[in-house]
Amino acid sequence: MRNFILVLLLTSMPVATFAQSSKEKHTTVFKNGTLIDVNGGPSKTEMTVVVSGNRIITVGKSRTTKIPKGSKIVDATGKFLIPGLWDMHVHMFNNISRVGTDNHEVYFPLLIANGVTAARDMFSDPDDIKLAKQWQKQIEAGKLIGPRLFVSSSIVDGVPTFLPNLMGVKNAAEARAAVRSLKAAGAGLIKVYWNLTPETYFAIADESKKLGIPFAGHVPFLVSAAEVSNAGQKSIEHLTGILETCTSKEVELRNKEWTPAVYEEMVATFDDKKCLELYKRFAKNGTYHVPTAILHRGMALYDEPGFLDDPSFKYVPKSMMKEWSESPQLDRDHDLKTRKERYNWLLDMIGTMYRAGVPIMTGTDNNNPYVVPGFALHSELELFVRAGLTPIQALQSATIVPARYLGLTRSNGSTEKGKIADIILLDADPLSDIRNTRKIAAVMVNGKLLDRADLDKMLKTVEASATNN
Image (cartoon, rainbow, N blue to C red):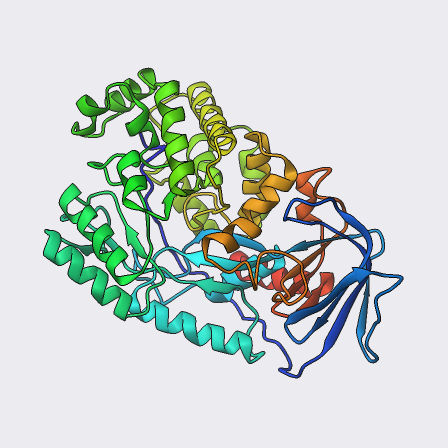
């Protein structure tokens, strides 16, 4: 069951933050590249993209596109342009451990160097929301380089809370009051969690609708995934609630205490037909899913030969690697062969869900064992392709689909005229091999161009900080 019980282990790794040098309006031109259309159209060769300030002002064929005088020209010949990537489940703040304040001095460079230009934080206390707004002002003023950050709220849970420092509510009145206070504090959505009772969960759902604020998060233990979808939950994280709802013994097993034996019985009684009906319900209701497959991979395959050879781990302090290796999140109830089979089954679940029309988004749940910010997003894309999505479908899950989820398709999510200039220049075609999203030649974030040397400098600073623990 530990594959589905996710505990946030938040820690701090300070390092210098990189800042823009100027707020002045400038023009940058990506000339003669291949434009990947995440709206589903064919790739377009010999294209030029003109950026003024932080907006795309022209997208057209190179031979007919007029280049403004004094523009900075980026030769994109033989290269590929995709929109900036989105990580829809990050943790920027230390709300569980309360160690330090936040991790942006490390996470911003790691995210940006990997082309992650926007992120949704999934545990944002009122003080965190104020801090995130300060960062956004600094980014817009050219004083800080970082992703566009969309905040959620404090996590609202039942009593007792599943983790420390969550907002516990005991009844419907407290649940409604929590929604009102969090919306007033500037929350972007209400984050719901495992120990909510049906009474408190549906009170949150009703109050959120009344106030016009979305709610999202985990599927509570005592509520089915079908019920949360019908209640209007905007997104479900980590595939929570799927196994519990898809067992043919749902009523019998739901109220049992979670143990390895109960988990095994749920797996043994998993009903594919029942689950397909659930996926159709998700699709009909517009319930988005953030599977965080990379998180499940770390919990299941942490001792697989070669697992620790991942080059991204050099950006993680040894003390944190040790904490991860001792984490109670890791599945030690099953042998590696069984864990591999269960993990592959989970990937099949993602593919089946997608084919049923369920909107899927990339998210990594960083700070959990073996999830490194930025790098993990590329791994998530690769796992989506392994699950059965095509490369373009995987790219959509990290670009236009998150923009659609947030209602921002007029300004974000694709490389089109009038949109914010979050752009990645790749050395190879991601549609021929999704792993090519890692081959980054340059990143433009909010109109600021960072070439390969800039990105390498950012990564070197984080690596040095990790080496110094």
